[in-house]
Length: 613
Image 1: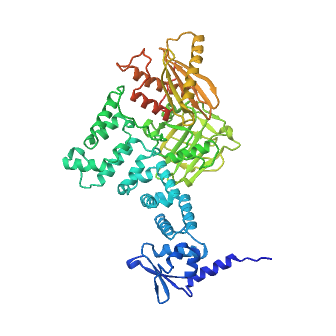
Image 2: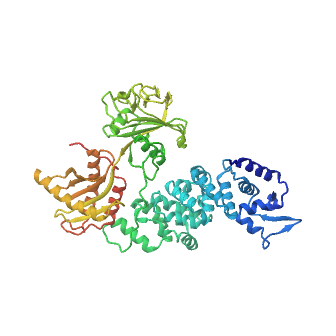
Image 3: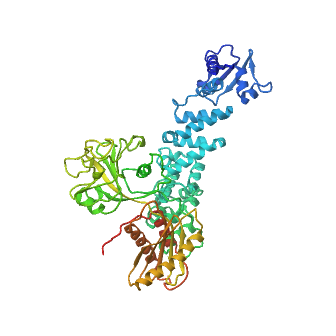
């Protein structure tokens, strides 16, 4: 029979470290006034660490009075104690350390070369990256960047920052970011920032490197221009100027023309003022489309949580990089009017919406999801798919609570001409525009997640859509392809050329059956194949638009009509150019048109559609 008592051995080794009985190693950790002695045992250090095996060899060892002398001024006393405790008994507790201290410990552990502890610390930092990156983003990023062995941690931190760039770009210490790191960030295709914000931050950083230089470029002399040009030179090729709007380019970029290459300025002026002119330059592709919704109350992370709740998944099922829906602001009380009339005018019959309200004098937000639609019917609507929610602190996602419909789901949504958005028969959430305030009276939803009585500081309604565009094709009246754009990374271009070609036959057959039309015609769903739906539209000049979608739920005709309206507007702007041959068969090459189609592909639900006859 075998008996083992490993814990007893571990405890005894820990006592040996604490009591330092019979020590034969003196470690001087830290430097200057912070240096402290630590006592240890060479046999244990040799056995557990190749680093110490080498350090205590005859070639390297320093001995005094029979004791090994080991000096490490670059490792703090506290970090060394933690490392020794792990060497002696395999124990480590990181919960009481701040992010920068853990990074210092990781660097020290890497130097002492203890692979098991290195792996554990990296795992801990990755698991708690949100907390530590918020606390000390610049310090952590720069420390990890300097050590090639921290590859996994580096990749995770960089991905997190690209996903939530405010961590860095809104940090007070952003201007102190080292140039190589800023350059690395600006090279990223997945940096989720509008290009004009990237430019604004670059200018801010460059100016901060020279505090004596005025922020007003009109005040710069020749010497100042030279200084700023040298500072910004390495970063200019990383800015995707062709994805900055004309207005922003003129107002925010052009004033700095003296520090930007002349040919670049000239090309961008032509691009913005004569979009149909061919340019002999490579236009950079956009960064991966940023999830956007013009809400002043919530951020991308909230929408990721909403998406999970909509699909009855957990809070962390989606992140800001894979949100499956498009969200567009329909109504903002401060902008559109703080009345029931304004609410219904903007939001009735729009389909699925999310209501968000911020409670006065607090950071709490409350709201609900209506998967149906709002109207003025003075009646209840039944659904199991709605929910109400609350974030006690909108800046802390961990404070989220959600309530689902109960057996009283027949009253899940309540619509009234004199009411704002209302959920439940009690009502579980009633947004009121009168002076009595809004309230919650639990009735139709599980969990009481909303305060009984409150006044909201601001309120908005957000329309959601699950349109995912895979391809947009513009086909001439002689069935000649004018422009085909593939937005899919999983399917080759040839597939969408084939779909566009076969769609022409379907359109001709459908329109031919109905007779020639003198008006623009929305043709609806042409056909479905595999996981794709193909929709069509024909102008009064018999130019055809074909859109290929991948969808998760049914698409409303109003959504598709709005989408085709935007494509048609982009096409009209193209053909109104006096140099465009309307009857020609040449492909459309206008940079402005391409940018417009890219924007439609990124945000297919933008804009409103007038469905009146």
